[in-house]
Length: 340
Ligand code: SF4
Ligand code: SF4
Image: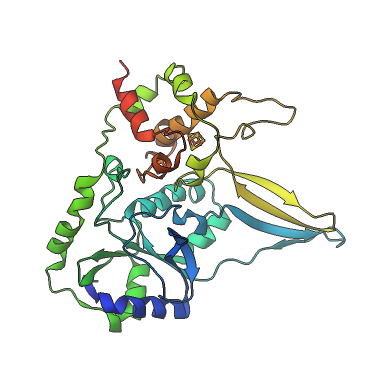
């Protein structure tokens, strides 16, 4: 489908129309911070944000998710599955967060198929929005991500001042665009050049991090003293993993509140917590902060590449910005490069 154009004053109408037949998930301002939330209409949706404090990962891999329930008073002990999600539109995701969903696909929808994730993924249409500006901590370009491209999105909007350029990238995007065709006009052919100009500042402003040779160096750095030195200041709060769009580890717990009815949940977990790897019997394969810090960076920059052929980081910069002791993956990459 050819590129479309959407006037700024039609955005709210577009969101209202989408919300009539889908669950609409969009960025809103809540207590001064930008968060993705389900909304009933376009009222209050903000699209000129730089990056949401937490990624929209929660709508595919919730921090806490009920998997099923059971009733032990029922002689059949039948497992009652949870209902799936309705058809949804995730509106306004930035290119780095869209790429992170493609990385989660490699984990949850490949060798091992995770029905909970796949249901949400299949029922979600992703409308991405290009970045015209970025935060001082952004470095998506290091991972081949561009502020003006969003591989994995179904539609891509780019703010061109008085209008948005609308690129239709997939069949899902085409269906959504067709359903809202009365709100779009055809792009007059100037959109592509205007988009390049509009997104250039984000590309220019972001940190330039060079990953050349980093994976090869890390292949020989398991016992390097750098991990002990870097881990000293970590306080094990787990913030870095909580805000990361690609972290996907979880634990499974049963809860029954002393009644016959029980629930099974899966809850996001963090490799930065001391109990993360503690096994029954008390064995702890990662007993100190050194092993846990090493694990986080090795997983993002070495093991994920070995397993899935891509880095497990998208350069969103959230962990840099939120870590209370400034343990910074961009600095780690630069330090690895300096190792002789
Ligand atoms: S490791 Fe940090 S910079 Fe990389 S994707 Fe996760 S939060 Fe973003
Ligand atoms: S946010 Fe910083 S201090 Fe907290 S666990 Fe992560 S690296 Fe450690």
